[in-house]
Length: 111
Ligand code: AMP
Ligand code: ZN
Image 1 (cartoon, rainbow, N blue to C red):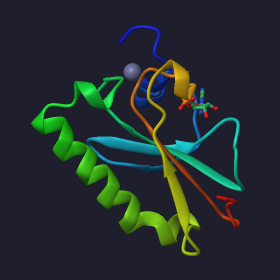
Image 2: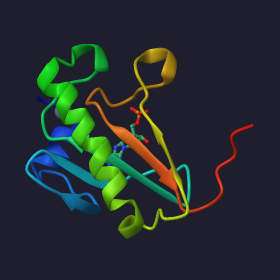
Image 3: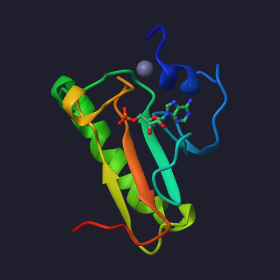
């Protein structure tokens, strides 16, 4: 997808601090961290919204969650972490390539 910053990161056209990569997803550091550890889990396939997920993409999203769970300790997240998926304008989604924010590395306020 032209002019998509995450497609460019996936393609290696712009730099990122990658922490994990396999054939279908990449995990890299967010450039403007909102917690001590702030990573983004990004599918290599470009799509913007959960509402665009067919069965294959739903399965991919499930594998992304499973992979985050498996990798969490090695990413410094053994103490717990929070996942966020911003969807659309009102949620402040700025990059229209679906991504899961992974926040942790410190206590995360909720209330
Ligand atoms: P969202 O607001 O949910 O669309 O989140 C997009 C996230 O991408 C923000 O937290 C940005 O800081 C992050 N971001 C944008 N450009 C880059 C980049 N080149 N490398 C790493 N993170 C980025
Ligand atoms: Zn993209």
